[in-house]
Amino acid sequence: MFRARRPLFLPLALLLPLTTACGGGSDAGDASDGKTVTVTVGYQSKTINTVTAGTLLRSLGYFEEELTAQGRKDGLTYRVAWQDYATGAPITAQMTAGKIDIGSMGDFPLLINAARGKQLKEPTRLVAVTGYNLRGGLNTVVTAPGSPLRSLADLKGRKVSSSVGSAADGTLVRALRRAGIDPAKEVRKLNQQPSVGASALAAGSVDALSQFVAWPGLLAYQGKATALYDGAELNLPTFHGVTVREKFAERRPAVLDAFLRAQRRATDHLRTRPIAAAETVAKETGLPAEVVHLYNGAQGIATFDPALRPELIAALKEDVPVLKEAGLVKDVDVDAFVDAEPLRRALPDLTYPKASLPKPELWLKGQASTRTFDSPAQLLKAVKGAPVRAAYVPDAVTGTPWFADRAVWVADGSRWLAFMTRSGAERYVAGHAGSRIFPYADAVRLAS
Picture (cartoon, rainbow, N blue to C red):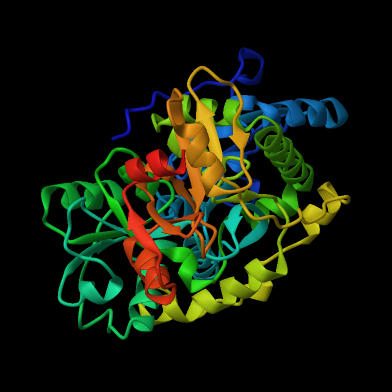
């Protein structure tokens, strides 16, 4: 699994003595002499679709650079305290206690963040997005290799590990209902942290695992899991975003602006240097770079952009009933929670990136860049005999990229198609006479 990660420290110039601790109401972060401001950022290093507001941003030092420039304008000294957590829940707890100023987390945890903030009179605001997938491909249900389960319908009466309150759990609930299964009565769902669920799947104590990035990809890469259900089949957007304490945002708008500018710089770095970014995140988290790139690469599952796209906000509103039913929130006023003004102020030229379909991609050993192909067949030909570090191919229906050697391959005449799940491949074959499913090795041999 992941290796333990030692805390990183800021440059010496930024580690100036403080006379008060960070946190505590509207004065959170201010030193008693009024000259030093501590900004506490909560992030999830291993939830890699938040890296532009967390792991990658921290490693690049862009936020500290922006604050140094701000300090030259206002005469203050800024210190950034980075706090790493496994999930969004503890970030929310610290924010509502006034101890974290800016945090990043997935869409379902963001709604809980909004609800808890209002309840505890420490309101928060959603001010930016980090990574998203407009179809929902960031969440996946996986089974153990060799499992007899072939589709969601097979989960009836089975044990499934998930994390209640996460977007992955929302995917599971919605997907089961579409399959005609009552998630509360016909599935034995275990509420577990991702690492616990991964261990349970390996031990055979659960039949399936529904989790968010990067767990499904990691387990598949390690040969410990097979994709059963691609969250993109729901065709509902899912994303991760940045939330800020309202009091902090009002007291320190320049600091929030600096964070958003730094986030955009980290986003640009990820887009222009995807392999370097993947290697950096891998080093910081212990995740294989090949897994990071599956999600965060130029052809990856996630698209990175800070913009608060209307499709994402609309999807957030559709998530509220799922959390209400689970008893995790009473209600959330999404329109009041979303605050687009800081982005307009800090990044007035921000525009939405053009949507594009991912292409097959090949990463060779020893190479600092990748090659893309116009068809899965071209990828298969390029793979044969090559020193492959990782090969990725989009699902023929949902477009979700997956490891080529973990995909299910179908030959339809002279065409080759890849599917993330066995059930997806079988549905295609059932509707296309003469098409056949092949193991990856045979697909490589025959295509070449």
